[in-house]
View 1 (cartoon, rainbow, N blue to C red):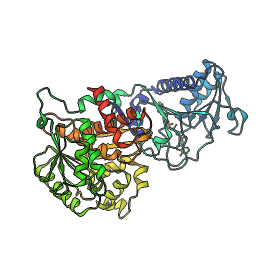
View 2 (cartoon, protein in one colour; view 1 turned 90 degrees about the horizontal axis):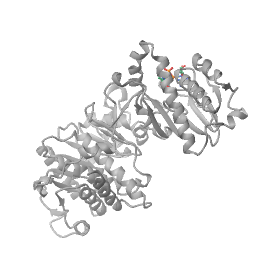
View 3 (cartoon, rainbow, N blue to C red; view 1 turned 30 degrees about the horizontal axis):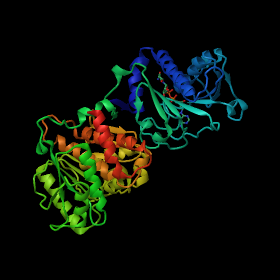
View 4 (tube, helix red, strand yellow; view 1 turned 30 degrees about the vertical axis):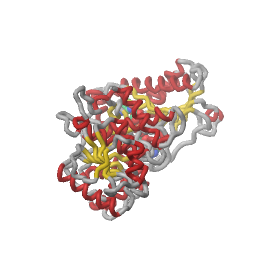
Length: 499
Ligand SMILES: NC(=O)C1=CN([C@@H]2O[C@H](COP(=O)(O)OP(=O)(O)OC[C@H]3O[C@@H](n4cnc5c(N)ncnc54)[C@H](O)[C@@H]3O)[C@@H](O)[C@H]2O)[C@H](O)CC1
């Protein structure tokens, strides 16, 4: 499990060490790690360090100091180092070390030396950035390594209010930062290398957590040797409609591949009908049900419901039932239009950005003074998904899985096990039905834990489902582009490797 902090939290954690006079040591450790990152990137691109042409874009603060010290370390390995000052002042000790290592300050980006740079170290703005940045040109074809956070990106939120550098690699210090994963920042940070500079004892509870493969097995319900279908858990599914029959089958595929004792599929009518025929044709192990009060351990409601009056009425009935019985539930897609806030029921909502915006507007996100009557749109949510997910969790009391290139999983409370970010499945996941499959995966995890004595936090269960879905996409993408119906096979492969 990786911990993710805001830039503000990192700055606060640095304070005791700075007060103890350890600033220069911290800077040297950071700069050394930055130099190592540059060397690794050169080698990845079959470029030698001796003779490599490396230019630093140097800001006025300690971020610039990191960059200058890193350049001096690279000069010792034979690199040809230059730098461009982007502000009136420059870190004095860093500048001295840079010059002592043979570094030359260039007059500006128009110089031939800069145009020939093979690597640019972006050391303009780090955690001290405030507001919009005017930007700086980067030579075409140069590899870009950002120091701590790409300049122009907020370390706290990932928001970019002016211009921002796009890095191939970000070497970040002391702790991973929210801005590297959230909103626009995720598109600017490139690969990420974390350098430990000894902040550990001073770091607070993280803002977010990032799951590793080794975290997943304990977040998945155990398949006990003496289990039977009822102890593994029964999942009720109200999904699909005449208009979107496939969603029902995809939900079941996701749940079955993750592992569930049984699926009771709530049919549209008491008589045989195409939707149920399709689901049973694909998954004969699914049990058709006409009575929503039949005992289950969890429910999935919403995928592919469409605006069918009958399906919507059934959904309202099931949502009420799950609240009365405090049953775990995953509410997806059209089901999100039906939920009401503030429930103690263990519920996971799985909106994408557009659905999240609609829910925020319906539940009155603009109700507080600061945002009175301000409508939220998809772009607002995409600009800061973490904030949107936190607001939704606060308004509903639910765990929010805000789906996107980087998926946020956010419970209504703060602290460990409550907020996660999943930095994106394979791009091929952007295909119809992958959300239905995800809903089924998460619902299966909740079903398996529903009656366990010591289950992980609900947000952690949902995060494990998101992780499985993303890992499955890479497993399936190895064979090329895919339709969502092929994801379940990837889920089985990943689960088999984990257990
Ligand atoms: N604190 C430490 O000892 C260590 C810090 N590390 C590195 O230092 C930066 C944080 O340094 P800081 O000096 O606080 O701020 P910055 O260098 O990020 O920038 C401040 C500098 O930039 C100007 N500025 C702010 N916003 C803008 C803007 N929008 N446009 C233009 N200029 C702006 C501001 O006026 C200041 O002059 C941290 O990221 C690390 O890289 C070491 O890692 C560890 C030790």
